[in-house]
Picture (cartoon, rainbow, N blue to C red):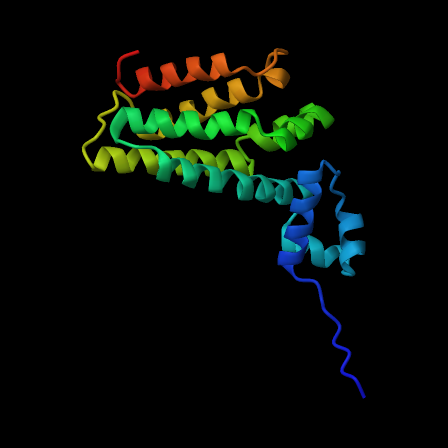
Length: 193
C-alpha cells in the first residue's frame, strides 16, 4: 500500500503565496487565500493577523534586502555613507514596478499600508534607519545636530513624501525630488549641501 502523505499548509506557505500574489499585482483576499491553502479562515488569521499586517510583512520582505544590500555596497562612512544608503535604497523603491502598480490599484489603501505610523513597513523602516544612525554616531562618524529618533523619523517621512508624491501631492515621483531629499538629509545630518 502506497503512503499518501497529505501536505498541510504552513504559515510560511501563506506568506509565500501572498508575496507571489502581491508581486503579480493580484489583490489579496484572506478568504480566498485560506480556501486556496485548504485551511480555515481562523487559522489563517492566527498565522498572519489581518490583511494589512500580511501585506506589511510582504512589503518588509522586499524592502529589507534592498536596505541590507545598500548598507553592504555603499562605501565610506558618516554623512556620505548615510546619504548613499538612503539614495540607493529609495531610488530602487522609486522604480519598483510592483509597488507603482500597488499604489495605482488603490491609492488610499496603499498610502495607509506604506506610511501609517501603525504600519509594519513604516515602523520597521524608522527602526532600521535609527540603528544605522546610532551605529554611525557610536563609531564617531557623525554628530547630528538633533535627536537621533526624530532625525530618523524625519528622514523616513521625507523619503515617503518623494516616493509616494503621486498619492500625497498629486504629482509623479521623480528622481530629481529624491536628489533634493538626499540634499535635505545631508543638511539634517549636519553636512554641507
